[in-house]
Amino acid sequence: MNPMVKKMTVLMTVAGMTATMAACGSSANGSKPAAGGNSGKAAAPTDISVTTLAFAAAPTGELEAVKKLNEKFNVNLKLSWIPSAQITEKLNALLAARDIPDVLFLEDFNYTPAFLNAVDQGAFWDLAPYIKNYPNLAKYPENVYANASLKGKLYSLPRVRPLDGHEALLLRKDWLDKLGMQPPKTMDELFAVLEAFNKKDPDGNGKADTYGAVLAGSPGPASYLLTMFGTGNKWKEEGGSLVPYWWTAQARESLAFWNKTYQAGGVLPDFPVIKTAQFKDMLVQGKAGAAIANVYDAYKYNVELQKTNPQANLMAFELPKAPDGKAYYEQASGYYGQFLINKKTVDEAKLKKILEVYDYTASVEGYNLATYGMQDVDFKVKSDGSVEQTEEGKKKGYSGDTTGQWVTGYFDKYTRAKVPGMPNDVLELNKKLIDSINSIPDPTYGLAKSATYKEKGADWDKKLNDMLVNVIIGKNSLDDWDKFVAQYKADPSFQQHVKETNDLYKEKIKK
Image 1 (cartoon, rainbow, N blue to C red):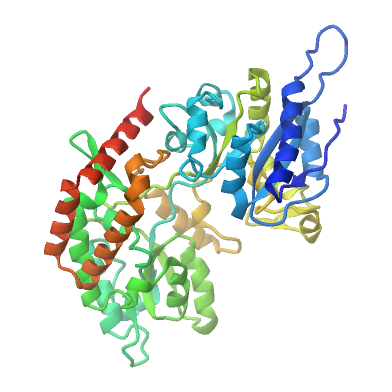
Image 2: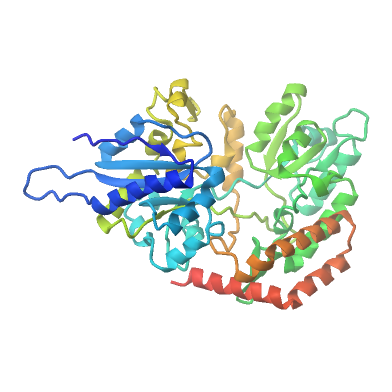
Protein backbone atom coordinates (compact mmCIF):
# COMPACT_ATOMS: atom_id res chain seq x y z
CA MET A 1 0.00 0.00 0.00
CA ASN A 2 1.05 3.61 -0.49
CA PRO A 3 1.35 5.36 2.88
CA MET A 4 0.31 8.93 3.40
CA VAL A 5 3.09 11.51 3.36
CA LYS A 6 2.57 14.48 5.62
CA LYS A 7 3.75 17.93 4.67
CA MET A 8 7.16 18.87 6.05
CA THR A 9 7.48 22.03 8.09
CA VAL A 10 10.36 24.46 8.35
CA LEU A 11 10.71 25.29 12.03
CA MET A 12 11.28 29.02 12.30
CA THR A 13 10.52 29.61 15.97
CA VAL A 14 10.95 27.65 19.19
CA ALA A 15 7.22 27.61 19.70
CA GLY A 16 6.53 26.44 16.17
CA MET A 17 9.21 23.78 16.39
CA THR A 18 8.05 22.55 19.77
CA ALA A 19 4.47 22.23 18.57
CA THR A 20 5.51 20.34 15.48
CA MET A 21 7.81 17.98 17.33
CA ALA A 22 5.27 17.42 20.08
CA ALA A 23 2.96 16.11 17.40
CA CYS A 24 5.75 13.94 16.00
CA GLY A 25 6.70 12.68 19.42
CA SER A 26 3.18 11.64 20.34
CA SER A 27 2.79 9.90 17.01
CA ALA A 28 6.05 8.04 17.44
CA ASN A 29 5.09 7.01 20.98
CA GLY A 30 1.64 5.84 20.07
CA SER A 31 2.28 4.24 16.71
CA LYS A 32 4.12 0.93 16.56
CA PRO A 33 4.56 -1.14 13.39
CA ALA A 34 1.65 -3.55 13.23
CA ALA A 35 2.54 -7.23 13.36
CA GLY A 36 1.84 -9.20 10.21
CA GLY A 37 -0.06 -11.91 12.13
CA ASN A 38 -2.94 -13.90 10.67
CA SER A 39 -5.10 -10.93 9.77
CA GLY A 40 -3.77 -10.86 6.23
CA LYS A 41 -3.31 -7.08 6.47
CA ALA A 42 -0.05 -5.38 5.57
CA ALA A 43 1.89 -3.82 8.42
CA ALA A 44 1.08 -0.16 9.04
CA PRO A 45 3.83 2.26 8.03
CA THR A 46 6.27 3.20 10.80
CA ASP A 47 6.28 6.88 11.70
CA ILE A 48 9.82 8.28 11.88
CA SER A 49 10.31 11.89 12.95
CA VAL A 50 13.62 13.51 12.07
CA THR A 51 14.84 16.99 13.00
CA THR A 52 17.94 18.40 11.34
CA LEU A 53 19.49 21.69 10.26
CA ALA A 54 19.23 23.59 6.98
CA PHE A 55 21.65 26.08 5.43
CA ALA A 56 19.02 27.39 3.02
CA ALA A 57 15.24 27.58 2.78
CA ALA A 58 13.73 24.15 3.27
CA PRO A 59 10.97 22.69 1.05
CA THR A 60 7.48 23.44 2.23
CA GLY A 61 5.54 20.73 0.43
CA GLU A 62 5.55 17.05 -0.40
CA LEU A 63 8.68 15.72 -2.09
CA GLU A 64 8.56 12.80 -4.48
CA ALA A 65 11.86 11.47 -3.09
CA VAL A 66 10.40 11.17 0.41
CA LYS A 67 7.34 9.45 -1.01
CA LYS A 68 9.61 6.93 -2.74
CA LEU A 69 11.52 6.26 0.48
CA ASN A 70 8.27 5.85 2.39
CA GLU A 71 7.03 3.31 -0.14
CA LYS A 72 10.34 1.43 -0.29
CA PHE A 73 10.62 0.96 3.48
CA ASN A 74 6.96 1.17 4.57
CA VAL A 75 7.64 4.22 6.72
CA ASN A 76 6.19 7.68 7.16
CA LEU A 77 9.12 10.09 7.30
CA LYS A 78 8.36 13.37 9.06
CA LEU A 79 11.26 15.67 8.29
CA SER A 80 11.70 19.01 10.04
CA TRP A 81 14.49 21.50 9.40
CA ILE A 82 15.91 24.14 11.75
CA PRO A 83 17.78 27.09 10.21
CA SER A 84 21.49 26.58 10.93
CA ALA A 85 21.85 29.90 12.77
CA GLN A 86 19.23 28.80 15.31
CA ILE A 87 20.16 25.14 15.71
CA THR A 88 21.88 25.30 19.12
CA GLU A 89 19.17 27.39 20.75
CA LYS A 90 16.34 25.26 19.43
CA LEU A 91 17.92 21.90 20.20
CA ASN A 92 18.37 23.00 23.80
CA ALA A 93 14.72 24.09 23.82
CA LEU A 94 13.65 20.66 22.56
CA LEU A 95 15.64 18.92 25.26
CA ALA A 96 14.33 21.21 27.99
CA ALA A 97 10.77 20.50 26.85
CA ARG A 98 11.51 16.75 26.76
CA ASP A 99 10.15 16.86 23.25
CA ILE A 100 12.85 15.04 21.28
CA PRO A 101 11.99 13.47 17.91
CA ASP A 102 12.92 9.91 16.97
CA VAL A 103 16.08 11.06 15.17
CA LEU A 104 17.83 14.27 16.12
CA PHE A 105 20.77 16.09 14.52
CA LEU A 106 23.42 17.38 16.91
CA GLU A 107 26.29 19.48 15.60
CA ASP A 108 28.62 19.06 18.56
CA PHE A 109 28.18 17.98 22.17
CA ASN A 110 30.35 20.94 23.19
CA TYR A 111 27.78 23.35 21.73
CA THR A 112 24.90 21.56 23.44
CA PRO A 113 26.42 20.02 26.60
CA ALA A 114 23.01 19.29 28.12
CA PHE A 115 22.82 16.37 25.69
CA LEU A 116 25.77 14.75 27.48
CA ASN A 117 23.60 14.56 30.60
CA ALA A 118 20.84 13.03 28.50
CA VAL A 119 23.30 10.41 27.23
CA ASP A 120 24.25 9.57 30.84
CA GLN A 121 20.56 9.17 31.64
CA GLY A 122 20.12 6.59 28.85
CA ALA A 123 18.14 8.83 26.50
CA PHE A 124 19.72 7.54 23.28
CA TRP A 125 20.48 4.19 21.70
CA ASP A 126 23.99 2.75 21.67
CA LEU A 127 24.29 1.85 17.99
CA ALA A 128 27.58 -0.04 18.09
CA PRO A 129 25.98 -3.52 18.35
CA TYR A 130 23.82 -2.88 15.26
CA ILE A 131 26.04 -1.15 12.69
CA LYS A 132 27.68 -4.37 11.46
CA ASN A 133 24.29 -5.57 10.21
CA TYR A 134 23.91 -2.66 7.77
CA PRO A 135 26.46 -2.98 4.94
CA ASN A 136 26.62 0.64 3.78
CA LEU A 137 26.91 2.05 7.30
CA ALA A 138 29.45 -0.66 8.10
CA LYS A 139 31.65 0.70 5.27
CA TYR A 140 32.38 3.87 7.20
CA PRO A 141 36.01 3.83 8.40
CA GLU A 142 36.56 2.53 11.91
CA ASN A 143 38.19 5.83 12.88
CA VAL A 144 35.01 7.73 12.03
CA TYR A 145 33.03 5.68 14.51
CA ALA A 146 35.85 5.83 17.07
CA ASN A 147 35.97 9.64 16.78
CA ALA A 148 32.19 9.90 17.19
CA SER A 149 32.07 7.58 20.24
CA LEU A 150 31.51 8.61 23.83
CA LYS A 151 32.59 6.61 26.86
CA GLY A 152 33.32 3.59 24.73
CA LYS A 153 29.86 3.59 23.13
CA LEU A 154 28.40 4.89 19.87
CA TYR A 155 25.37 7.06 20.60
CA SER A 156 25.03 8.47 17.10
CA LEU A 157 25.19 7.98 13.38
CA PRO A 158 27.97 10.31 12.20
CA ARG A 159 27.35 12.41 9.08
CA VAL A 160 30.37 10.99 7.30
CA ARG A 161 33.08 13.12 5.73
CA PRO A 162 36.57 12.25 4.41
CA LEU A 163 39.39 11.79 6.90
CA ASP A 164 42.08 13.20 4.63
CA GLY A 165 42.62 15.68 1.82
CA HIS A 166 42.20 18.87 3.85
CA GLU A 167 45.96 19.34 4.16
CA ALA A 168 48.20 19.54 1.10
CA LEU A 169 51.03 21.81 0.01
CA LEU A 170 49.77 24.05 -2.80
CA LEU A 171 52.62 25.35 -4.97
CA ARG A 172 53.03 27.41 -8.12
CA LYS A 173 54.66 24.73 -10.27
CA ASP A 174 55.33 27.31 -12.99
CA TRP A 175 57.35 29.35 -10.47
CA LEU A 176 59.31 26.25 -9.49
CA ASP A 177 60.05 25.49 -13.14
CA LYS A 178 61.22 29.06 -13.82
CA LEU A 179 63.61 28.88 -10.86
CA GLY A 180 64.80 25.36 -11.72
CA MET A 181 63.52 23.95 -8.43
CA GLN A 182 61.65 20.79 -7.48
CA PRO A 183 58.68 20.38 -5.11
CA PRO A 184 60.16 20.23 -1.59
CA LYS A 185 60.44 16.86 0.12
CA THR A 186 61.98 18.08 3.39
CA MET A 187 61.63 21.12 5.62
CA ASP A 188 65.00 22.44 4.49
CA GLU A 189 63.87 22.22 0.88
CA LEU A 190 60.58 23.91 1.80
CA PHE A 191 62.52 26.81 3.33
CA ALA A 192 64.63 27.15 0.18
CA VAL A 193 61.55 27.20 -2.08
CA LEU A 194 59.64 29.73 0.02
CA GLU A 195 62.67 32.01 0.29
CA ALA A 196 63.27 31.81 -3.48
CA PHE A 197 59.65 32.74 -4.19
CA ASN A 198 60.36 36.01 -2.39
CA LYS A 199 63.90 36.80 -3.52
CA LYS A 200 64.27 35.41 -7.07
CA ASP A 201 61.41 37.09 -8.98
CA PRO A 202 59.53 33.88 -9.87
CA ASP A 203 56.87 35.72 -11.88
CA GLY A 204 59.53 37.47 -13.97
CA ASN A 205 58.07 40.97 -13.76
CA GLY A 206 61.28 42.53 -12.45
CA LYS A 207 59.63 43.58 -9.19
CA ALA A 208 60.13 42.37 -5.62
CA ASP A 209 56.41 41.76 -5.12
CA THR A 210 56.08 38.03 -4.45
CA TYR A 211 56.30 35.96 -1.28
CA GLY A 212 56.45 32.32 -0.35
CA ALA A 213 53.46 31.06 1.61
CA VAL A 214 50.21 32.68 2.61
CA LEU A 215 49.49 31.42 6.13
CA ALA A 216 46.67 32.27 8.50
CA GLY A 217 47.60 34.01 11.76
CA SER A 218 44.13 35.18 12.78
CA PRO A 219 42.58 34.35 15.20
CA GLY A 220 45.65 32.17 15.69
CA PRO A 221 48.09 30.13 13.60
CA ALA A 222 46.69 26.93 12.11
CA SER A 223 47.73 23.96 14.22
CA TYR A 224 49.27 22.20 11.21
CA LEU A 225 52.17 24.69 11.31
CA LEU A 226 53.22 22.78 14.43
CA THR A 227 51.78 19.32 13.83
CA MET A 228 53.58 18.83 10.50
CA PHE A 229 56.75 18.63 12.60
CA GLY A 230 55.41 15.64 14.57
CA THR A 231 53.83 17.23 17.62
CA GLY A 232 50.78 14.96 17.51
CA ASN A 233 47.31 16.09 16.53
CA LYS A 234 46.26 18.66 19.20
CA TRP A 235 47.35 16.24 21.92
CA LYS A 236 50.25 13.78 22.06
CA GLU A 237 50.63 10.63 24.09
CA GLU A 238 53.78 10.69 26.19
CA GLY A 239 54.44 8.18 28.95
CA GLY A 240 50.89 6.84 28.79
CA SER A 241 49.27 10.27 29.17
CA LEU A 242 48.05 12.97 26.80
CA VAL A 243 49.89 16.29 26.78
CA PRO A 244 49.04 19.41 24.76
CA TYR A 245 50.81 19.30 21.39
CA TRP A 246 52.38 22.71 21.94
CA TRP A 247 54.29 21.45 24.99
CA THR A 248 56.44 19.16 22.84
CA ALA A 249 60.02 19.67 21.63
CA GLN A 250 58.72 19.42 18.07
CA ALA A 251 56.50 22.47 18.64
CA ARG A 252 59.54 24.55 19.54
CA GLU A 253 61.35 23.21 16.48
CA SER A 254 58.45 24.23 14.26
CA LEU A 255 58.40 27.77 15.66
CA ALA A 256 62.12 28.12 14.99
CA PHE A 257 61.51 27.04 11.39
CA TRP A 258 58.60 29.39 10.74
CA ASN A 259 60.40 32.33 12.38
CA LYS A 260 63.39 31.72 10.12
CA THR A 261 61.10 31.42 7.08
CA TYR A 262 59.15 34.56 7.97
CA GLN A 263 62.34 36.59 8.40
CA ALA A 264 63.54 35.37 4.98
CA GLY A 265 60.37 36.57 3.21
CA GLY A 266 59.04 33.06 2.87
CA VAL A 267 55.73 34.00 4.53
CA LEU A 268 53.43 36.85 3.50
CA PRO A 269 54.25 39.69 5.94
CA ASP A 270 50.56 40.26 6.74
CA PHE A 271 50.55 36.82 8.40
CA PRO A 272 49.33 38.06 11.84
CA VAL A 273 46.03 39.35 10.42
CA ILE A 274 45.45 36.96 7.52
CA LYS A 275 42.50 34.57 7.70
CA THR A 276 42.15 31.28 5.84
CA ALA A 277 39.40 32.81 3.68
CA GLN A 278 42.03 35.11 2.16
CA PHE A 279 44.21 32.30 0.80
CA LYS A 280 42.47 32.28 -2.57
CA ASP A 281 42.90 36.02 -3.12
CA MET A 282 46.61 35.99 -2.26
CA LEU A 283 47.27 33.04 -4.57
CA VAL A 284 45.09 34.24 -7.45
CA GLN A 285 46.61 37.72 -7.29
CA GLY A 286 50.09 36.21 -7.52
CA LYS A 287 51.24 37.62 -4.19
CA ALA A 288 52.03 34.19 -2.74
CA GLY A 289 53.21 31.00 -4.38
CA ALA A 290 52.32 28.49 -1.69
CA ALA A 291 49.67 27.60 0.89
CA ILE A 292 48.46 24.63 2.89
CA ALA A 293 44.85 23.88 1.97
CA ASN A 294 42.44 21.27 0.57
CA VAL A 295 43.84 19.14 -2.25
CA TYR A 296 41.14 20.29 -4.68
CA ASP A 297 41.76 23.97 -3.90
CA ALA A 298 44.84 23.90 -6.14
CA TYR A 299 42.73 23.19 -9.21
CA LYS A 300 39.92 25.55 -8.19
CA TYR A 301 42.29 28.46 -7.60
CA ASN A 302 44.28 27.67 -10.74
CA VAL A 303 41.15 28.05 -12.85
CA GLU A 304 40.92 31.61 -11.50
CA LEU A 305 44.65 32.21 -11.94
CA GLN A 306 44.60 31.19 -15.58
CA LYS A 307 41.96 33.76 -16.45
CA THR A 308 44.68 36.42 -16.22
CA ASN A 309 47.78 34.23 -16.50
CA PRO A 310 47.25 31.25 -18.81
CA GLN A 311 50.73 29.93 -17.97
CA ALA A 312 50.00 29.64 -14.24
CA ASN A 313 50.07 26.16 -12.78
CA LEU A 314 49.07 25.80 -9.13
CA MET A 315 49.30 22.17 -8.04
CA ALA A 316 48.82 20.12 -4.86
CA PHE A 317 51.76 18.19 -3.40
CA GLU A 318 52.49 16.08 -0.34
CA LEU A 319 53.58 17.89 2.82
CA PRO A 320 57.36 17.87 3.32
CA LYS A 321 58.85 15.38 5.75
CA ALA A 322 59.68 16.53 9.28
CA PRO A 323 63.30 16.39 10.49
CA ASP A 324 62.71 12.81 11.69
CA GLY A 325 62.05 11.73 8.09
CA LYS A 326 58.26 11.29 8.38
CA ALA A 327 55.43 13.35 6.89
CA TYR A 328 52.74 14.29 9.41
CA TYR A 329 49.13 15.12 8.61
CA GLU A 330 46.27 15.88 10.97
CA GLN A 331 43.42 13.46 10.46
CA ALA A 332 40.00 15.08 10.30
CA SER A 333 37.20 13.77 12.49
CA GLY A 334 35.56 12.10 9.49
CA TYR A 335 32.14 13.53 10.23
CA TYR A 336 30.20 16.73 10.60
CA GLY A 337 27.35 16.45 13.07
CA GLN A 338 25.69 13.32 14.42
CA PHE A 339 22.21 11.82 14.52
CA LEU A 340 21.03 10.57 17.91
CA ILE A 341 18.16 8.08 18.12
CA ASN A 342 15.66 8.59 20.93
CA LYS A 343 15.36 5.52 23.13
CA LYS A 344 12.09 6.71 24.68
CA THR A 345 10.10 6.86 21.44
CA VAL A 346 11.97 4.16 19.52
CA ASP A 347 11.83 0.47 20.42
CA GLU A 348 14.28 -2.04 18.93
CA ALA A 349 12.04 -2.94 16.00
CA LYS A 350 11.67 0.71 15.07
CA LEU A 351 15.41 1.28 15.57
CA LYS A 352 16.14 -1.41 12.99
CA LYS A 353 13.71 0.24 10.59
CA ILE A 354 15.43 3.60 11.05
CA LEU A 355 18.82 2.01 10.45
CA GLU A 356 17.46 0.31 7.36
CA VAL A 357 16.48 3.69 5.92
CA TYR A 358 19.81 5.27 6.87
CA ASP A 359 21.73 2.34 5.45
CA TYR A 360 20.09 2.92 2.07
CA THR A 361 20.80 6.65 2.15
CA ALA A 362 24.44 5.74 2.92
CA SER A 363 24.67 4.37 -0.63
CA VAL A 364 25.26 6.61 -3.65
CA GLU A 365 21.83 5.77 -5.05
CA GLY A 366 20.00 6.37 -1.77
CA TYR A 367 21.92 9.53 -0.95
CA ASN A 368 21.24 11.05 -4.37
CA LEU A 369 17.54 10.25 -4.08
CA ALA A 370 17.19 11.76 -0.60
CA THR A 371 19.32 14.80 -1.41
CA TYR A 372 18.67 15.64 -5.05
CA GLY A 373 15.37 13.97 -5.90
CA MET A 374 14.45 11.96 -8.98
CA GLN A 375 17.29 11.31 -11.41
CA ASP A 376 16.96 12.94 -14.86
CA VAL A 377 14.10 15.05 -13.52
CA ASP A 378 15.39 16.82 -10.42
CA PHE A 379 19.09 16.13 -11.03
CA LYS A 380 21.46 14.77 -13.65
CA VAL A 381 24.66 12.77 -13.23
CA LYS A 382 27.39 14.27 -15.42
CA SER A 383 30.01 12.28 -17.31
CA ASP A 384 32.57 12.82 -14.53
CA GLY A 385 30.15 11.39 -11.95
CA SER A 386 29.24 14.71 -10.35
CA VAL A 387 25.63 15.66 -9.69
CA GLU A 388 23.95 18.72 -11.16
CA GLN A 389 20.61 19.89 -9.76
CA THR A 390 18.13 20.82 -12.48
CA GLU A 391 16.05 23.97 -12.37
CA GLU A 392 13.02 21.76 -11.76
CA GLY A 393 14.73 20.21 -8.74
CA LYS A 394 15.73 23.61 -7.38
CA LYS A 395 12.14 24.82 -7.62
CA LYS A 396 10.99 21.88 -5.52
CA GLY A 397 13.54 22.66 -2.80
CA TYR A 398 16.10 19.91 -3.37
CA SER A 399 19.71 20.77 -2.56
CA GLY A 400 22.65 19.55 -0.53
CA ASP A 401 22.18 22.56 1.75
CA THR A 402 18.68 21.47 2.75
CA THR A 403 17.35 18.07 1.72
CA GLY A 404 20.83 16.57 2.08
CA GLN A 405 21.04 17.50 5.75
CA TRP A 406 18.86 14.72 7.16
CA VAL A 407 21.02 11.83 5.91
CA THR A 408 24.51 10.68 6.90
CA GLY A 409 25.75 10.18 3.34
CA TYR A 410 28.26 7.74 1.86
CA PHE A 411 32.00 7.65 2.50
CA ASP A 412 34.26 8.80 -0.34
CA LYS A 413 37.93 9.15 0.64
CA TYR A 414 38.52 11.27 -2.47
CA THR A 415 35.89 13.95 -1.81
CA ARG A 416 38.59 16.57 -1.27
CA ALA A 417 40.48 15.47 -4.38
CA LYS A 418 37.89 16.36 -7.00
CA VAL A 419 35.60 19.07 -8.28
CA PRO A 420 33.25 18.98 -11.28
CA GLY A 421 35.06 19.56 -14.57
CA MET A 422 38.50 18.59 -13.25
CA PRO A 423 40.68 16.95 -15.96
CA ASN A 424 41.28 13.25 -15.37
CA ASP A 425 45.07 13.61 -15.13
CA VAL A 426 44.70 16.15 -12.29
CA LEU A 427 42.15 13.93 -10.54
CA GLU A 428 44.45 10.91 -10.70
CA LEU A 429 47.37 12.89 -9.27
CA ASN A 430 45.12 14.15 -6.46
CA LYS A 431 43.92 10.64 -5.67
CA LYS A 432 47.49 9.40 -5.56
CA LEU A 433 48.34 12.20 -3.14
CA ILE A 434 45.50 11.25 -0.79
CA ASP A 435 46.48 7.58 -1.00
CA SER A 436 49.95 8.54 0.24
CA ILE A 437 48.66 10.15 3.43
CA ASN A 438 49.05 8.35 6.75
CA SER A 439 47.33 10.83 9.04
CA ILE A 440 47.20 11.06 12.82
CA PRO A 441 43.82 11.28 14.60
CA ASP A 442 43.16 13.72 17.41
CA PRO A 443 42.73 11.44 20.45
CA THR A 444 40.24 13.86 21.98
CA TYR A 445 37.72 13.86 19.11
CA GLY A 446 34.22 13.47 20.50
CA LEU A 447 35.18 14.52 24.02
CA ALA A 448 33.42 17.28 25.88
CA LYS A 449 35.61 20.18 26.90
CA SER A 450 37.00 19.79 30.40
CA ALA A 451 35.17 21.67 33.13
CA THR A 452 38.23 23.83 33.79
CA TYR A 453 38.66 24.60 30.09
CA LYS A 454 35.06 25.79 29.86
CA GLU A 455 35.86 28.33 32.55
CA LYS A 456 39.29 29.49 31.41
CA GLY A 457 39.85 28.13 27.92
CA ALA A 458 39.03 31.28 25.96
CA ASP A 459 41.69 33.24 27.85
CA TRP A 460 44.24 30.41 27.52
CA ASP A 461 43.64 30.12 23.77
CA LYS A 462 44.05 33.83 23.17
CA LYS A 463 47.33 33.95 25.08
CA LEU A 464 48.61 30.88 23.26
CA ASN A 465 47.65 32.22 19.84
CA ASP A 466 49.23 35.60 20.58
CA MET A 467 52.47 33.97 21.70
CA LEU A 468 52.62 31.66 18.65
CA VAL A 469 52.18 34.61 16.27
CA ASN A 470 54.69 36.76 18.13
CA VAL A 471 57.36 34.05 18.10
CA ILE A 472 56.89 33.45 14.36
CA ILE A 473 57.22 37.14 13.49
CA GLY A 474 60.07 37.68 15.96
CA LYS A 475 58.30 39.89 18.46
CA ASN A 476 58.98 37.25 21.11
CA SER A 477 62.00 34.95 21.29
CA LEU A 478 62.22 31.18 21.67
CA ASP A 479 63.40 31.83 25.25
CA ASP A 480 60.11 33.65 25.81
CA TRP A 481 58.36 30.61 24.38
CA ASP A 482 60.16 28.27 26.78
CA LYS A 483 59.10 30.42 29.74
CA PHE A 484 55.52 30.51 28.44
CA VAL A 485 55.32 26.70 28.23
CA ALA A 486 56.93 26.31 31.66
CA GLN A 487 54.38 28.72 33.12
CA TYR A 488 51.48 26.59 31.91
CA LYS A 489 53.07 23.33 32.97
CA ALA A 490 53.25 24.78 36.49
CA ASP A 491 49.80 26.41 36.49
CA PRO A 492 47.46 24.42 38.83
CA SER A 493 44.38 25.31 36.74
CA PHE A 494 45.99 24.16 33.51
CA GLN A 495 47.27 21.03 35.22
CA GLN A 496 43.68 20.33 36.26
CA HIS A 497 42.51 20.81 32.66
CA VAL A 498 45.10 18.29 31.45
CA LYS A 499 44.04 15.81 34.14
CA GLU A 500 40.36 16.20 33.32
CA THR A 501 41.06 15.73 29.61
CA ASN A 502 43.01 12.56 30.32
CA ASP A 503 40.19 11.26 32.50
CA LEU A 504 37.66 11.94 29.73
CA TYR A 505 39.92 10.25 27.18
CA LYS A 506 40.33 7.12 29.30
CA GLU A 507 36.57 6.98 29.71
CA LYS A 508 36.11 7.36 25.95
CA ILE A 509 38.40 4.44 25.02
CA LYS A 510 37.35 2.01 27.72
CA LYS A 511 35.64 -1.10 26.46
